[in-house]
Image (cartoon, helix red, strand yellow):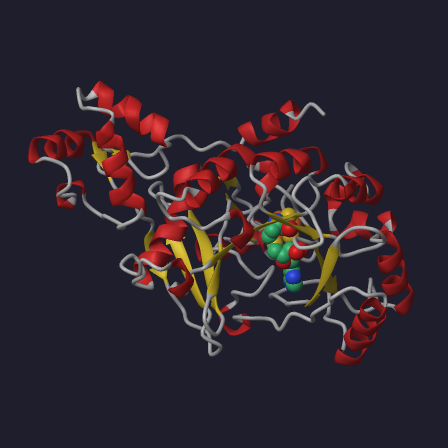
Amino acid sequence: MNTDNILGHAARFEPAETLIDGKRNLVGLTMDELKVEMAALGLEAFRAKQLWTALYCHGARDVMDITTLAKPAREKIAAHFAVGRPTVSAAPVSVDGSRKWLLAMPDGHEVEAVYIPEEDRGALCVSCQVGCTNKCSFCHTGTMRLVRNLDASEILMQVMLARDVLNEWKIPDLEKRMLSNIVLMGMGEPLFNYANVAKALKIIMDEGGLAIGKRRITLSTSGVVPMIRRCGEELGVNLAISLHAVTDEVRDVLIPLNKKYPIADLIQACRDYPAATNARRITFEYVMLKGVNDSPADARALVKLLEGIPAKINLLPYNPWPGSPYECSDDATIQKFGDIVNRAGYASPIRTPRGRDIMAACGQLKSASVKARAGQERDE
Ligand code: SAH
Ligand code: SF4
Protein backbone atom coordinates (compact mmCIF):
# COMPACT_ATOMS: atom_id res chain seq x y z
CA MET A 1 0.00 0.00 0.00
CA ASN A 2 1.25 3.48 -0.80
CA THR A 3 1.98 5.26 2.47
CA ASP A 4 3.11 8.58 1.02
CA ASN A 5 -0.16 10.32 1.87
CA ILE A 6 0.25 9.41 5.49
CA LEU A 7 3.76 10.79 5.58
CA GLY A 8 2.50 13.86 3.74
CA HIS A 9 -0.08 14.34 6.47
CA ALA A 10 2.74 14.33 9.02
CA ALA A 11 4.90 16.71 7.01
CA ARG A 12 2.57 19.62 7.77
CA PHE A 13 3.42 19.26 11.43
CA GLU A 14 7.15 18.73 11.03
CA PRO A 15 9.32 20.75 13.44
CA ALA A 16 12.26 22.83 12.27
CA GLU A 17 15.63 21.76 13.68
CA THR A 18 16.23 23.69 16.88
CA LEU A 19 19.70 24.63 18.00
CA ILE A 20 21.03 24.45 21.54
CA ASP A 21 22.87 27.68 22.29
CA GLY A 22 23.51 27.99 18.58
CA LYS A 23 24.83 24.44 18.28
CA ARG A 24 23.36 21.34 16.66
CA ASN A 25 22.13 18.49 18.82
CA LEU A 26 24.18 15.29 18.68
CA VAL A 27 21.29 13.32 20.14
CA GLY A 28 19.11 11.90 17.40
CA LEU A 29 21.73 11.62 14.67
CA THR A 30 22.08 8.13 13.23
CA MET A 31 25.52 6.51 13.11
CA ASP A 32 25.73 7.30 9.40
CA GLU A 33 24.81 10.92 10.03
CA LEU A 34 27.41 11.14 12.80
CA LYS A 35 30.06 9.78 10.41
CA VAL A 36 29.16 12.41 7.83
CA GLU A 37 29.40 15.14 10.46
CA MET A 38 32.75 13.85 11.71
CA ALA A 39 34.08 13.78 8.14
CA ALA A 40 32.90 17.36 7.66
CA LEU A 41 34.98 18.31 10.71
CA GLY A 42 37.98 16.46 9.27
CA LEU A 43 37.72 13.70 11.89
CA GLU A 44 37.98 9.95 11.37
CA ALA A 45 34.87 7.76 11.06
CA PHE A 46 35.68 5.87 14.28
CA ARG A 47 35.10 9.10 16.23
CA ALA A 48 31.42 8.60 15.41
CA LYS A 49 31.45 5.23 17.17
CA GLN A 50 33.20 6.76 20.18
CA LEU A 51 30.59 9.49 20.35
CA TRP A 52 27.77 6.96 20.03
CA THR A 53 29.09 4.90 22.93
CA ALA A 54 29.59 8.00 25.07
CA LEU A 55 26.10 9.33 24.35
CA TYR A 56 24.03 6.16 24.44
CA CYS A 57 25.98 3.78 26.71
CA HIS A 58 27.40 6.23 29.21
CA GLY A 59 24.96 9.12 29.01
CA ALA A 60 27.59 11.81 28.44
CA ARG A 61 26.07 15.26 28.87
CA ASP A 62 28.96 17.39 27.65
CA VAL A 63 31.22 16.75 24.68
CA MET A 64 34.23 18.01 26.66
CA ASP A 65 33.66 15.21 29.21
CA ILE A 66 34.09 12.47 26.59
CA THR A 67 37.64 11.58 27.43
CA THR A 68 37.81 8.66 24.99
CA LEU A 69 38.13 11.40 22.38
CA ALA A 70 41.43 13.26 22.11
CA LYS A 71 41.12 16.82 23.35
CA PRO A 72 41.54 18.50 19.95
CA ALA A 73 38.74 16.28 18.56
CA ARG A 74 36.51 17.14 21.52
CA GLU A 75 37.14 20.83 20.98
CA LYS A 76 36.32 20.60 17.30
CA ILE A 77 33.08 18.76 17.96
CA ALA A 78 32.08 20.99 20.87
CA ALA A 79 32.49 24.07 18.69
CA HIS A 80 29.56 22.89 16.56
CA PHE A 81 27.57 20.37 18.58
CA ALA A 82 25.98 19.99 22.00
CA VAL A 83 24.32 17.10 23.85
CA GLY A 84 20.64 17.94 24.24
CA ARG A 85 18.18 17.25 27.00
CA PRO A 86 14.73 18.69 27.51
CA THR A 87 14.26 21.06 30.43
CA VAL A 88 12.13 19.64 33.24
CA SER A 89 9.35 22.18 33.89
CA ALA A 90 7.61 20.03 36.52
CA ALA A 91 8.15 16.56 37.96
CA PRO A 92 5.27 15.41 40.16
CA VAL A 93 5.44 11.98 41.79
CA SER A 94 2.26 9.93 42.31
CA VAL A 95 1.34 8.17 45.55
CA ASP A 96 1.78 4.94 43.55
CA GLY A 97 5.37 5.84 42.61
CA SER A 98 4.67 6.88 39.01
CA ARG A 99 6.52 9.98 37.95
CA LYS A 100 5.51 12.49 35.38
CA TRP A 101 7.92 14.86 33.70
CA LEU A 102 6.65 17.94 31.97
CA LEU A 103 9.42 18.54 29.49
CA ALA A 104 10.18 21.70 27.56
CA MET A 105 11.87 20.99 24.27
CA PRO A 106 14.57 23.32 22.94
CA ASP A 107 11.95 25.49 21.16
CA GLY A 108 9.85 25.79 24.34
CA HIS A 109 7.06 23.38 23.37
CA GLU A 110 6.13 21.04 26.17
CA VAL A 111 5.26 17.35 26.28
CA GLU A 112 4.86 14.83 29.06
CA ALA A 113 6.64 11.56 29.74
CA VAL A 114 5.52 9.19 32.49
CA TYR A 115 7.61 6.58 34.28
CA ILE A 116 5.63 3.66 35.68
CA PRO A 117 7.65 1.48 38.05
CA GLU A 118 6.88 -2.19 38.67
CA GLU A 119 8.56 -4.35 41.27
CA ASP A 120 11.80 -5.05 39.43
CA ARG A 121 11.39 -3.15 36.19
CA GLY A 122 9.51 -0.21 34.77
CA ALA A 123 8.13 1.36 31.63
CA LEU A 124 8.57 4.81 30.29
CA CYS A 125 5.54 6.16 28.51
CA VAL A 126 6.90 8.40 25.78
CA SER A 127 5.20 11.16 23.78
CA CYS A 128 5.67 11.49 20.04
CA GLN A 129 3.75 14.68 19.30
CA VAL A 130 2.98 17.95 21.03
CA GLY A 131 -0.76 17.40 21.38
CA CYS A 132 -2.15 14.94 18.87
CA THR A 133 -3.16 15.07 15.23
CA ASN A 134 -6.23 13.05 16.24
CA LYS A 135 -9.08 14.29 18.36
CA CYS A 136 -10.49 11.27 20.12
CA SER A 137 -13.48 12.40 22.12
CA PHE A 138 -12.43 10.64 25.34
CA CYS A 139 -8.80 11.78 25.40
CA HIS A 140 -7.43 14.87 27.08
CA THR A 141 -4.44 15.08 24.73
CA GLY A 142 -6.87 15.26 21.82
CA THR A 143 -8.17 18.57 23.16
CA MET A 144 -4.85 20.35 22.83
CA ARG A 145 -4.89 23.13 20.32
CA LEU A 146 -1.20 23.22 19.68
CA VAL A 147 0.02 20.32 17.61
CA ARG A 148 3.30 19.38 16.07
CA ASN A 149 5.38 16.28 15.58
CA LEU A 150 8.36 15.69 17.81
CA ASP A 151 11.56 15.03 15.93
CA ALA A 152 13.64 11.93 16.61
CA SER A 153 15.90 13.72 19.09
CA GLU A 154 12.93 14.94 21.12
CA ILE A 155 11.55 11.41 21.38
CA LEU A 156 14.95 10.00 22.30
CA MET A 157 15.75 12.69 24.83
CA GLN A 158 12.73 11.65 26.91
CA VAL A 159 14.30 8.22 27.35
CA MET A 160 17.72 9.67 28.05
CA LEU A 161 16.38 12.12 30.59
CA ALA A 162 14.58 9.31 32.41
CA ARG A 163 17.81 7.34 32.51
CA ASP A 164 19.57 10.44 33.92
CA VAL A 165 16.98 10.94 36.64
CA LEU A 166 16.82 7.26 37.55
CA ASN A 167 20.63 7.28 37.60
CA GLU A 168 20.87 4.13 35.48
CA TRP A 169 23.68 4.91 33.05
CA LYS A 170 26.17 3.10 35.25
CA ILE A 171 24.18 -0.12 35.50
CA PRO A 172 25.65 -2.36 32.80
CA ASP A 173 23.22 -5.27 33.24
CA LEU A 174 20.04 -4.52 31.26
CA GLU A 175 18.09 -6.92 33.44
CA LYS A 176 18.85 -4.82 36.51
CA ARG A 177 17.61 -1.57 35.06
CA MET A 178 14.37 -0.10 36.30
CA LEU A 179 13.82 1.60 32.95
CA SER A 180 13.37 -1.67 31.09
CA ASN A 181 10.48 -1.01 28.73
CA ILE A 182 9.24 1.74 26.47
CA VAL A 183 5.62 2.31 25.59
CA LEU A 184 4.64 4.81 22.92
CA MET A 185 1.46 5.69 24.74
CA GLY A 186 2.04 9.28 25.72
CA MET A 187 0.87 12.31 23.80
CA GLY A 188 0.36 11.86 20.09
CA GLU A 189 -0.32 9.29 17.41
CA PRO A 190 2.97 7.51 16.63
CA LEU A 191 1.95 6.32 13.18
CA PHE A 192 1.22 9.89 12.10
CA ASN A 193 4.84 10.68 12.96
CA TYR A 194 6.30 7.47 11.67
CA ALA A 195 9.61 8.73 10.26
CA ASN A 196 10.70 10.38 13.51
CA VAL A 197 9.37 7.56 15.69
CA ALA A 198 11.18 4.96 13.57
CA LYS A 199 14.44 6.90 13.64
CA ALA A 200 14.28 7.28 17.42
CA LEU A 201 13.31 3.64 17.99
CA LYS A 202 16.15 2.35 15.84
CA ILE A 203 18.60 4.31 18.01
CA ILE A 204 16.87 3.14 21.20
CA MET A 205 17.05 -0.50 20.04
CA ASP A 206 20.71 -0.38 18.97
CA GLU A 207 22.61 -2.93 21.00
CA GLY A 208 25.71 -0.77 21.15
CA GLY A 209 23.73 1.99 22.82
CA LEU A 210 20.54 2.25 24.84
CA ALA A 211 19.85 -1.38 23.90
CA ILE A 212 16.15 -1.54 24.71
CA GLY A 213 15.07 -4.32 22.34
CA LYS A 214 11.96 -4.55 20.19
CA ARG A 215 10.36 -7.04 22.56
CA ARG A 216 10.45 -4.40 25.28
CA ILE A 217 8.88 -1.70 23.16
CA THR A 218 5.16 -1.32 22.53
CA LEU A 219 3.71 1.12 20.03
CA SER A 220 0.09 2.05 20.50
CA THR A 221 -1.97 3.33 17.59
CA SER A 222 -5.50 4.58 17.23
CA GLY A 223 -5.57 2.72 13.90
CA VAL A 224 -3.52 4.31 11.14
CA VAL A 225 -4.08 1.25 9.00
CA PRO A 226 -1.71 1.93 6.07
CA MET A 227 1.29 2.29 8.43
CA ILE A 228 0.77 -0.81 10.52
CA ARG A 229 2.46 -3.33 8.24
CA ARG A 230 5.47 -1.07 7.73
CA CYS A 231 5.81 -0.67 11.48
CA GLY A 232 5.90 -4.45 11.88
CA GLU A 233 8.33 -5.03 9.05
CA GLU A 234 10.77 -2.22 9.80
CA LEU A 235 10.63 -2.04 13.58
CA GLY A 236 9.14 -5.34 14.73
CA VAL A 237 7.95 -3.80 17.99
CA ASN A 238 4.92 -4.99 19.94
CA LEU A 239 1.70 -3.52 18.67
CA ALA A 240 -1.16 -2.15 20.75
CA ILE A 241 -4.40 -1.10 19.10
CA SER A 242 -6.73 1.41 20.70
CA LEU A 243 -9.89 -0.39 19.69
CA HIS A 244 -12.43 0.83 22.28
CA ALA A 245 -15.54 -0.18 20.32
CA VAL A 246 -16.88 -3.07 18.30
CA THR A 247 -19.10 -1.19 15.84
CA ASP A 248 -18.13 1.55 13.43
CA GLU A 249 -21.10 3.54 14.68
CA VAL A 250 -19.63 3.83 18.18
CA ARG A 251 -15.98 3.91 17.14
CA ASP A 252 -16.62 6.78 14.69
CA VAL A 253 -17.69 8.91 17.64
CA LEU A 254 -14.85 7.87 19.94
CA ILE A 255 -12.06 7.91 17.37
CA PRO A 256 -12.92 10.07 14.35
CA LEU A 257 -10.06 8.41 12.42
CA ASN A 258 -12.31 5.36 12.26
CA LYS A 259 -14.30 7.05 9.50
CA LYS A 260 -11.21 6.82 7.33
CA TYR A 261 -9.99 3.41 8.51
CA PRO A 262 -12.98 1.43 9.76
CA ILE A 263 -12.86 -1.56 12.08
CA ALA A 264 -12.81 -4.23 9.37
CA ASP A 265 -9.71 -2.71 7.75
CA LEU A 266 -8.04 -2.30 11.12
CA ILE A 267 -8.66 -5.89 12.11
CA GLN A 268 -7.32 -7.11 8.77
CA ALA A 269 -4.13 -5.07 9.32
CA CYS A 270 -3.78 -6.79 12.70
CA ARG A 271 -4.23 -10.21 11.12
CA ASP A 272 -1.43 -9.29 8.71
CA TYR A 273 0.89 -7.76 11.34
CA PRO A 274 4.30 -9.28 10.65
CA ALA A 275 5.59 -9.23 14.24
CA ALA A 276 2.57 -10.88 15.88
CA THR A 277 2.83 -14.47 17.09
CA ASN A 278 1.31 -16.39 19.94
CA ALA A 279 4.33 -15.46 21.99
CA ARG A 280 4.02 -11.80 21.00
CA ARG A 281 0.36 -11.08 20.95
CA ILE A 282 -1.23 -7.85 19.83
CA THR A 283 -2.68 -5.86 22.69
CA PHE A 284 -6.15 -4.45 22.17
CA GLU A 285 -6.90 -1.54 24.45
CA TYR A 286 -10.51 -1.08 25.40
CA VAL A 287 -11.49 1.91 27.49
CA MET A 288 -14.55 1.25 29.64
CA LEU A 289 -17.11 4.02 29.10
CA LYS A 290 -20.33 3.86 31.02
CA GLY A 291 -23.29 3.08 28.78
CA VAL A 292 -21.25 3.56 25.61
CA ASN A 293 -19.28 0.39 24.92
CA ASP A 294 -19.48 -1.70 28.09
CA SER A 295 -22.42 -4.10 27.66
CA PRO A 296 -22.14 -7.91 27.72
CA ALA A 297 -23.18 -7.86 24.05
CA ASP A 298 -20.18 -5.60 23.34
CA ALA A 299 -17.92 -8.07 25.13
CA ARG A 300 -19.25 -10.97 23.09
CA ALA A 301 -18.86 -8.99 19.86
CA LEU A 302 -15.30 -8.14 20.85
CA VAL A 303 -14.43 -11.79 21.26
CA LYS A 304 -15.92 -12.57 17.87
CA LEU A 305 -14.11 -9.70 16.19
CA LEU A 306 -10.70 -10.84 17.41
CA GLU A 307 -11.19 -14.51 16.59
CA GLY A 308 -7.98 -16.05 15.31
CA ILE A 309 -5.72 -13.07 16.18
CA PRO A 310 -2.99 -13.70 18.78
CA ALA A 311 -4.40 -11.10 21.14
CA LYS A 312 -4.64 -9.89 24.68
CA ILE A 313 -7.16 -7.33 25.76
CA ASN A 314 -6.40 -4.54 28.19
CA LEU A 315 -9.49 -3.16 29.82
CA LEU A 316 -8.77 0.45 30.72
CA PRO A 317 -10.98 2.08 33.33
CA TYR A 318 -11.77 5.48 31.87
CA ASN A 319 -9.64 8.22 33.39
CA PRO A 320 -11.63 11.40 33.68
CA TRP A 321 -10.21 14.85 33.07
CA PRO A 322 -11.68 18.30 33.66
CA GLY A 323 -14.67 18.76 31.40
CA SER A 324 -14.52 15.23 29.99
CA PRO A 325 -17.77 14.04 28.41
CA TYR A 326 -17.75 10.44 29.63
CA GLU A 327 -17.93 8.45 32.84
CA CYS A 328 -16.06 5.31 33.76
CA SER A 329 -18.11 2.10 33.82
CA ASP A 330 -18.72 0.81 37.31
CA ASP A 331 -16.58 -1.98 38.75
CA ALA A 332 -19.20 -4.70 38.42
CA THR A 333 -19.76 -3.90 34.74
CA ILE A 334 -16.04 -3.97 34.03
CA GLN A 335 -15.72 -7.24 35.91
CA LYS A 336 -18.57 -8.80 33.96
CA PHE A 337 -17.13 -7.61 30.66
CA GLY A 338 -13.73 -9.02 31.63
CA ASP A 339 -15.24 -12.38 32.59
CA ILE A 340 -16.87 -12.80 29.17
CA VAL A 341 -13.62 -11.99 27.40
CA ASN A 342 -11.67 -14.25 29.76
CA ARG A 343 -13.98 -17.18 29.30
CA ALA A 344 -13.35 -16.91 25.55
CA GLY A 345 -9.70 -17.59 26.27
CA TYR A 346 -8.22 -14.09 26.16
CA ALA A 347 -6.12 -12.62 28.91
CA SER A 348 -8.01 -9.48 29.82
CA PRO A 349 -6.34 -7.72 32.71
CA ILE A 350 -8.18 -4.74 34.08
CA ARG A 351 -5.49 -2.09 34.13
CA THR A 352 -5.18 -0.37 37.45
CA PRO A 353 -4.85 3.27 36.51
CA ARG A 354 -1.44 4.60 37.48
CA GLY A 355 -0.67 8.19 38.33
CA ARG A 356 -4.26 9.44 38.30
CA ASP A 357 -3.50 11.82 41.18
CA ILE A 358 -0.89 13.65 39.10
CA MET A 359 -2.96 13.49 35.88
CA ALA A 360 -0.45 11.04 34.43
CA ALA A 361 -2.81 8.17 33.65
CA CYS A 362 -3.76 7.12 30.10
CA GLY A 363 -5.52 9.89 28.26
CA GLN A 364 -4.95 12.52 30.93
CA LEU A 365 -1.81 14.01 29.48
CA LYS A 366 -1.94 17.56 28.37
CA SER A 367 0.89 19.98 28.90
CA ALA A 368 0.29 22.74 31.37
CA SER A 369 1.41 25.50 29.05
CA VAL A 370 -1.54 24.68 26.85
CA LYS A 371 -3.90 24.15 29.75
CA ALA A 372 -3.49 27.82 30.55
CA ARG A 373 -5.14 28.61 27.23
CA ALA A 374 -8.07 26.31 27.86
CA GLY A 375 -10.58 28.84 26.56
CA GLN A 376 -9.20 28.49 23.06
CA GLU A 377 -9.57 24.73 22.87
CA ARG A 378 -11.31 22.83 20.15
CA ASP A 379 -11.93 25.91 18.07
CA GLU A 380 -11.74 24.07 14.77
N1 SAH B 1 -2.25 7.87 20.44
C1 SAH B 1 -2.03 6.52 20.71
C2 SAH B 1 -1.22 6.29 21.95
C3 SAH B 1 -1.48 7.17 23.17
S1 SAH B 1 -2.90 6.97 24.16
C4 SAH B 1 -3.33 5.76 20.80
O1 SAH B 1 -4.37 6.39 20.85
O2 SAH B 1 -3.28 4.54 20.76
C5 SAH B 1 -2.67 5.56 25.20
C6 SAH B 1 -3.98 4.82 25.48
O3 SAH B 1 -4.82 5.52 26.40
C7 SAH B 1 -4.80 4.63 24.22
O4 SAH B 1 -5.35 3.33 24.19
C8 SAH B 1 -5.91 5.64 24.42
O5 SAH B 1 -7.03 5.31 23.66
C9 SAH B 1 -6.15 5.53 25.91
N2 SAH B 1 -6.88 6.67 26.47
C10 SAH B 1 -7.03 7.91 25.97
N3 SAH B 1 -7.79 8.66 26.79
C11 SAH B 1 -8.12 7.87 27.84
C12 SAH B 1 -8.85 8.09 29.05
N4 SAH B 1 -9.37 9.28 29.33
N5 SAH B 1 -8.98 7.05 29.93
C13 SAH B 1 -8.39 5.87 29.67
N6 SAH B 1 -7.68 5.60 28.56
C14 SAH B 1 -7.54 6.60 27.65
FE1 SF4 C 1 -4.35 11.04 20.07
FE2 SF4 C 1 -4.29 8.60 21.16
FE3 SF4 C 1 -5.48 10.65 22.46
FE4 SF4 C 1 -6.61 9.64 20.26
S1 SF4 C 1 -6.26 8.56 22.22
S2 SF4 C 1 -6.34 11.84 20.74
S3 SF4 C 1 -4.82 9.13 19.03
S4 SF4 C 1 -3.30 10.47 21.99
